[in-house]
Structure formats: C-alpha cells, structure tokens
Image 1 (cartoon, rainbow, N blue to C red):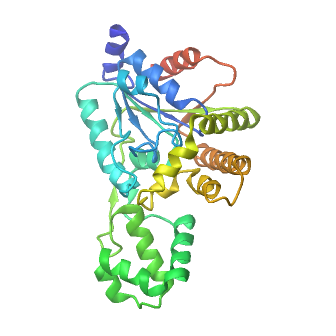
Image 2: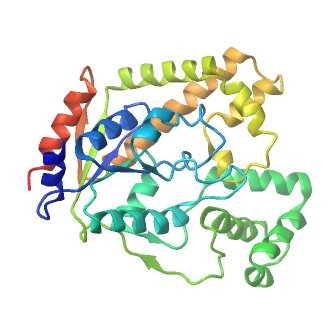
Image 3: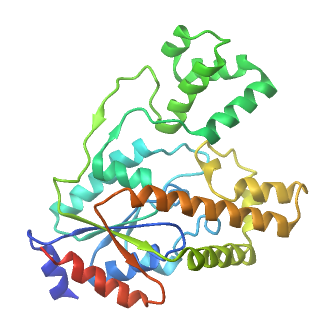
Length: 317
C-alpha cells in the first residue's frame, strides 16, 4: 500500500477522487476500500451524515469504518443545529486543500449533488427555491399567522424585515428560506466563492446500477433499517428540537406518521421506500448532467473489482 500511496502523491497524478452517485449504489463501501488502498482520508459529501444523533435513518457508515479510516464531516453537529451547503463549502474546501498540501490522498464520497458541486465549482451566496421548506413555512403561517413568521425574520434579518411588509408572506418566506438554507441573511453581501476544480488534480467517478437493481437495493436497505430499529430512533429524534435542515432527513416525516398512528408500520415503510426511490432518481438526474463524471456500473461486481478499476482510471495522467 505504501508504494501505491507514493504513486498517488506524485504531483502529476490524481490525489483527489470523488465518488458520487445515487443512494444505495455502495459509495461508502467503495470509498472505504479505496481509501484503504491509497492511504487516503475520506471527506463525506452527504448533507445528513453531519448529524450526531441519527445513525440508522442516515445509513451512517459502521463504527469499524469510521475508526479505521478518518472520515471528515460525519457526526459533527446536533440535529438541533442548522447545517447548510455554505457552512460545508467553507469547511470542506479548507480540509481538502490542507490534506493536498500535506500530500495525503483524499476520497470525497457522497450523494449530495449540491455539496459536491459547491466543492468543485464554487457557490453563489444565495440558493434557489426549496419547495419543501417553503411549504413548511406556508403551513406555519396558516397555523400561527403571518406575524409569527415576520417576528422570526426580524430576529434573524432585521434589515430585510424593515424593508418588507408584515403582510408580504411571499417575501418573508423567501428571506427566511435564504437564511435557513445558508445561515446568511438576505441583506448580506452577495458573492461567489470559487471551487477547487481547475486548481487541484481531481477525478470524479459516479457509481450506477440498473433501475431495477437500484430500486431492489433501496427497498432492502429500508427494510433493514426498520429491522434495526429506525422507528425507535426517530421517536427519540422527535423529542429534540430538529433544525429546519435536519427535518429534511428522508424517512422522518413518514415514520412520524407511524408513531402518530396515522399509517400502519407497513404503509409507513412503503412510503419511505417510495420517497427514497424518488430521491435516487433526482440524484441520478443531477449527476448525469455533469460530463466530467466517469461512470462505473457496479452491477454484479465486487467492491475490490470496482476499486481496482477506479485506481487504474485515476492513474491515467
């Protein structure tokens, strides 16, 4: 392994490898084996693995993986805290640059397309629309009144609040949306931060499966989550004050309905499966637009075979 690590440390060869793709394609396992092979550290690119409390519902890598290979941005904050792409971008790019300067190989692994794109291409200060967040804010306005949202806006962005009528729900929601997603008030300075693509040697590998195989793996993973006690885990999470970003974890909403008695265990499980399949579809749609990605179909292949292929591809420099 030492000899191969030295090869990957040479300036003309790739030392930063992205492993991306839809959920349930085996990214974590491939990244782990690849990191072992290269003597690398792993930088997680998953917006939900940052949370400490949930393990089952986020499919967090098992303890032996986390103990064997250093994983950055896994279990770093509480679900009661807001975490967004801007916080991640700032921290992740610093870690990757530091490791690169230390000549430590890096494997960036995850399915959060927005997070990966931020590292690669940089970000605008203000994000686009988040329909799920907007819907929650609209419902809150219906239940508690527009004034309740306006008070929240005054607390986090008083400058914008002064310019917006307390009855202008559309602008109030947009201002809160920006703050919750970025941690930056709408009144803050707009700027673009540059990514790492073009300044560091990077290869991007995408893992994929046939739709039938992928959906089968997703269904089996969800079933295993329920066997491991995900309902009890969510019950404990719901006793905490979940941040607006932690509420985005797939499965919490559906399992909450099980706990409330609104749906049966079987119905809730099917809802989680369906939502996860839809999420995988959106992930693939996002990643396939990026022509820099070298796709690897992992159907019927061992992890070792996939890793060997990735190593060979990334040494072509």
